[in-house]
Length: 76
Image (tube, rainbow, N blue to C red; front, top):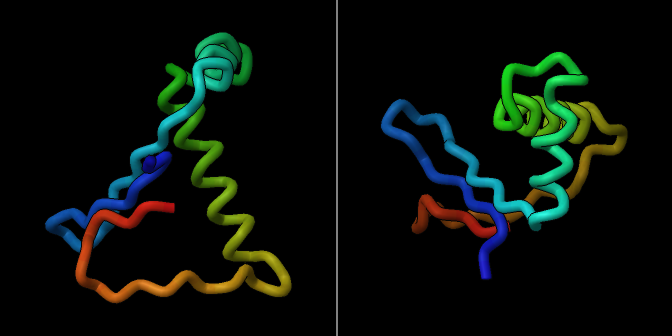
């Protein structure tokens, strides 16, 4: 079962699909306005981007995940 995927786009960037359990989706839908976001998608995007940025800046950096380039859809 895949919970998240990365899909390579034509421009070379990657699209992320994030699947949440109902309780976390409900939390995002309830909290986005109070945190200054337009919608729950924007709130979740900010959380994901912040987590990725913090992981990139971590000391020491997290271990790299191998990728053979054969599949543009990477489960993680």
